Length: 312
Image (cartoon, rainbow, N blue to C red):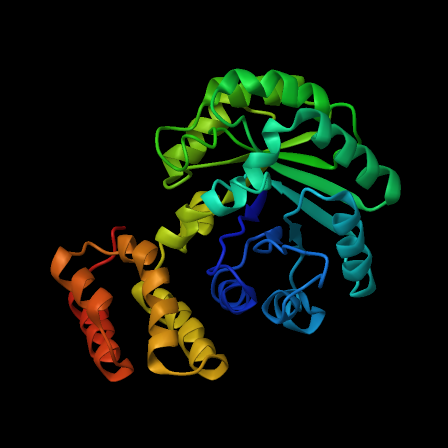
């Protein structure tokens, strides 16, 4: 099985990736939060920092690109090739309203002819590996049939399927009937993505799709960073390991970001997921959310790790 880390905007950047690789590892490919090029520039400073080779040593990293303009995708690939990358991912899954309204991400799935022309141009332009991360449609899972027909026309390196529609956002359960359709009909390698929170979730998928070769983990890793290791060999994450992981990320943010509020915003975003590693109560969670100073935050985190137990 290949284990991939999903791109989560604002969270799984290179500082997070380096901390995770050091503390836990076990990831075959890390996918970056999307690069969104426009006519004025390929990468913003933050996006460039995220893909610089010196920031991603010892990891296989796949840049993800979000655009509906083939020329911008091609320019971004050329730019990233110069940095040493040879595999790229097209984002056809982002459900955020501001993205979808511009017919990007999952919004591009409604433009079937434009999508086909786009894919034709990007695959003709390069011999690089280009994978696709997609949802199963905009409003209805029945849309996936036509999308699969389109994808099968091109040399897609890998199809990463999040079996929800855009309308589902992250609600409802993943549509495994639709995923099975992709698993059976797709002419290339298929990767599953969506709601792998427990070892039992992983085992259920493997029992249903025994030939599945890749899985992408997102919120499940954020909720329980030791999940992949636990799936592999049953090793339970220890509290000191989670604390080390937290501290590496925290110190990196304090070094690279300016001001208590900026650092706290990033840590609170992470804790909205990672708090689920603990047998916690709402009180400690609310105090993390309300912390205004790093010294206050430090006291709360010391209390969390000293007085609360992990879920396993």
